[in-house]
Image (cartoon, rainbow, N blue to C red; front, side, top):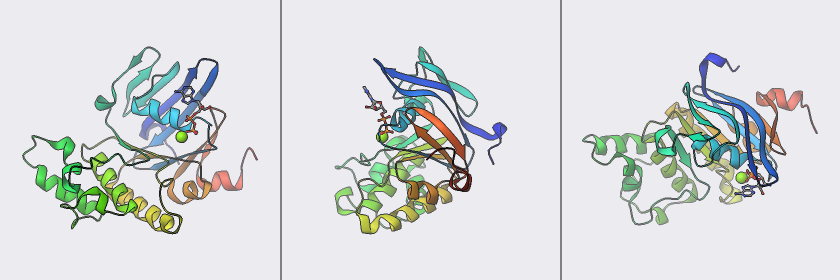
Length: 233
Ligand code: ADP
Ligand code: MG
């Protein structure tokens, strides 16, 4: 279970307001080191806004966000995304189409003498060791996603953030792709937050869950806790 001393991401009382719309409402959650947290909720419940706040792409209007013990967000103060050791995997993967797979993965490692070896190790970790010379458009959706994951892992982030990682994938491949992504995340030992509106995705991928509704985190616990002792319909 979550031990506060082992928190890699701590969200405390975070709110984000757009005009009159309270997108995130005094949210609290903790991601423990080496674990996968599923952020689950219906469309419009505030998941992406909270994830963007953790990444540094979005400011907070109340509360604090700490990553690895350092406060990175508070009202009026935000450490920029590139300085907060987060790796993002976007819904559409956002790969560079004119770069090879190896070029994409090594993009953030320019100037490093061990770049080729680092890229090879990353591709191996996501089971794409033989695809380094390929261009993104020649890969399947699941493979492109693992390239995006390898690129996010390249700079040794404290946390990997994934927003709806399966929404653009074909239904019949979804379970397989999900399994491969979980395996790659586990093999990397990364701490991760996975946003999804799909309860099955959340149950299968996550060690811990945070359930959002109307901007609030209404329940946290293991998937089993939420399944057997839900506090809401
Ligand atoms: P989710 O990812 O759970 O679907 P979002 O975080 O995208 O939810 O959105 C939460 C609420 O905040 C929604 O009502 C959405 O319309 C609103 N919202 C999100 N971003 C903006 C924005 N930039 N400006 C105004 N309202 C926004
Ligand atoms: Mg969203």
